[in-house]
Image (cartoon, rainbow, N blue to C red; front, side, top):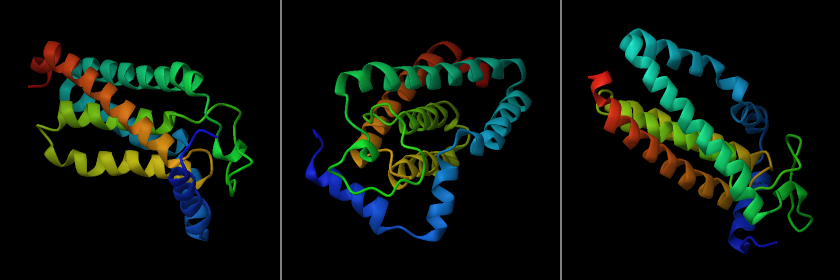
Length: 185
């Protein structure tokens, strides 16, 4: 295993040490994309109602942000590092709360995607609604935490995914604001 002892210790503390019935019920839901469908529908409606036709650009760039994040995290990064998931690593004590999956662990695509969306939206909409960051970053962090709690990612995988997502969200936000800032004002 190429992970550090600290990463494994933090994983075991979160995955096994913090076990409780409430988190056992909540964390598998938080990591499911379908759980967030009402939020995504709200976002689409909010953007279209508030920005009309101009909102289509924002939605397109949001889609580009998450698509890029997912593609980079899921393919080249995971293939390069080939880190085993904790639930596939026999050296790690794991409580599996969801099916493990056969793919590699680093980086967490869930963390990358959610931090990319959060960063993109904070940078593009944050000037108008500065408090949006108080919801979006904890939202992304809760999804990342859930990945550790259910046993499919190490904390380092989530941290790596968060960094990748923040970088990609920043890239797409800057590109959007360079060309389409006028569409939101």
